[in-house]
Image 1 (cartoon, rainbow, N blue to C red):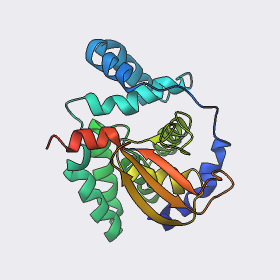
Image 2: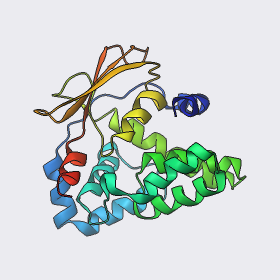
Image 3: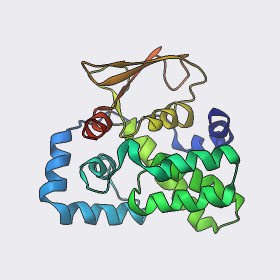
Image 4: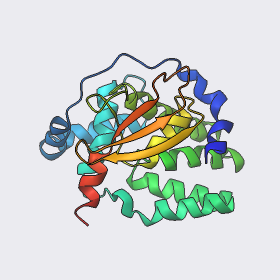
Length: 219
């Protein structure tokens, strides 16, 4: 998977440097999803339309808000599992079909966006379609690295799927080597020991996976 991320590196360079950190509150996200669904849906429409005026906190609402929706499948999504199999087989048509299917009910799946992007290029889909996948993918990575600095459990990168950790590390922060991964059961953070890069200078990277664990613990 890392090799595929490296193929896309030149396009990811358009992001530039990590932005200033923003405050984050899961409780507020849940409150909006539960009690202000019309507002949530309006922001979702803007996200789907690649609206350039979306703020970082709007993107955060859509990404983290997915975990409070009844359609959120967490680690139990059979299509996500099938996607990985098709990637291993290099079946571009099945990759594209499965990725776009996932995006129809989970528009913030970084796996689906990444492989929809690559497969749409291979299958010669329209430039507009491919750019839309790229835009959403980059927008989500930028948001995740803006809502935390990943250097401690007090200010971690927050992801709703453990797979998203690799997208942040390899697809955004240019991490080349990971030597260990451990879950801190007190903070619900994955602590990953990495070889530092120019974009991430610490040797330890923290990912809050609490929303993913909260969902899977119910199953």
